[in-house]
Length: 415
Image (cartoon, rainbow, N blue to C red; front, side, top):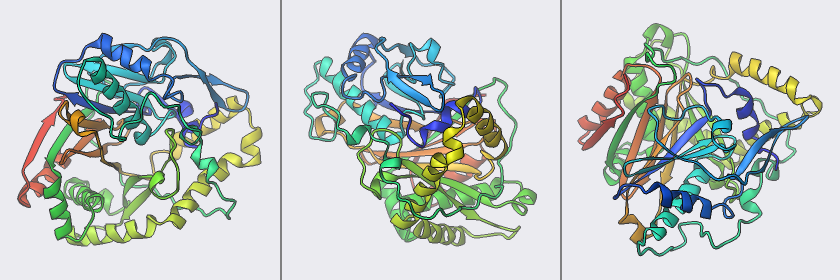
């Protein structure tokens, strides 16, 4: 099986400090039984074949082959979203981890995006609860293990929906970078979780005539400006990378990668901006970027690079060298931070009684990130960072509290 368009870069550029791994997790009511979890994962093998693979190097590109080895269930490590070492993981590019009542799934991004990972996790948790003897009924919100995967679920939707439209170029100037004192332990990621009632957040966003995503990106920009290096902010624009689930704009049921991103751009030039002004600027960019036509242009740009004749005939050993050099030079320049809002996670009603919360963590790499999900009228906002300072998160939370919202905050206390 070929890697999809978005997947091809990850095996080339992934390093210990930039793992390309993200995590989705479910917090249950009871302690996790590893043996039953192992059986639940193995039972999902035929339903999710695009996960049960091993990576190989071809002459021109990497490719996947089925992996028949047993999955390894491990205890959680303090190192979240650590580099995916397939040799120590029976060749797999995903890991199921346990800690008390939490089931975590870490995924190397070449396999899938958040949509595919959450679908996989939900199906495994559903099967786990069945094996535990829980009385739960699938209402269609869980992919049934009794069904066969469809052709559409396994497709590379980038290439399937590519149109030979003239390529547009999207500028990528150097963005403002958040800097700080790094953790002593290499590879450490600090997490701060912010949990609040979804209805209250919706009302607050509505007060500003914004969607939740627009509001959160605007607040993130405001918080960075309040805590950032003003001299550097006057030189470089603040750019928030916003991943977009393309399944919401172009028809696709793929369980592989099918996301693109755009960058919101805020050029302060040393001018003090109010939150309202910042939010208005962000909303204008959301309206401009989130159209089928604009996203199709971005998709075409990505796929056309892959289809370039010189790229196609270049041996993989040379691709790896050139791609790695190019990524190290410009890969992290276009954005300051990323914010991804997965949206609402839906479960059958009886299953909701067994699952307290879902979590979504981005790999930190060289820049911080924010991952958002909503479940059972609770919005979970998780900040990840590779340095000690939590001033950005403090300003972000204070703004919400000052607006009258009740907030719960937790942390992994990484020092």
